[in-house]
Length: 111
Length: 117
Image (cartoon, rainbow over all chains, first blue to last red; front, side, top):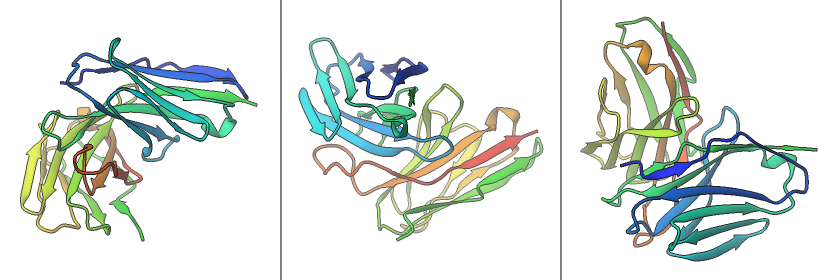
């Protein structure tokens, strides 16, 4: 029941670039998604969550859900070396009791 | 406020040995989870609990057991360790999941790196 696919990368960009991280999902019933950031050898931490469709913005980060194409996106503006991490998208399982994670995309921002 | 505490941080086991990974949270969260993370494979749910005395299987429960006798503790037991159980194990807790119950998301521990040789 994974049904959340994510390109593992790695993705390398220069400092200041706009980064787009994407996940796709297969079941249109899914409406609640989260993005987690995981630094090397650390536990993941919640970055943002989105519900249904549309955008949600928090500082340099924007989360977007496109229901028509079943795409979940995380945009990072003015990327910084401190953004270098693995980014995981997640959805709530059908029972509403746990999160199902994508494989994660590893991002490297060079100064 | 310690959050989610996992012990040990590192462990090497021999094939066939058993061990318990400890997880404690001090946030009075009802929901607790165990995930394993293999390189390039994301996080896979092993077991979870929605409250003391209630546990349920996740995606990859074989070879593991859990118990939840208190709100704070959620130990993961490995019986007869196998090389396939070499992984990084994360414990997490949450007050709620999903938009109908709030949007806290998970608080993760720092992980236990387990090698079975």
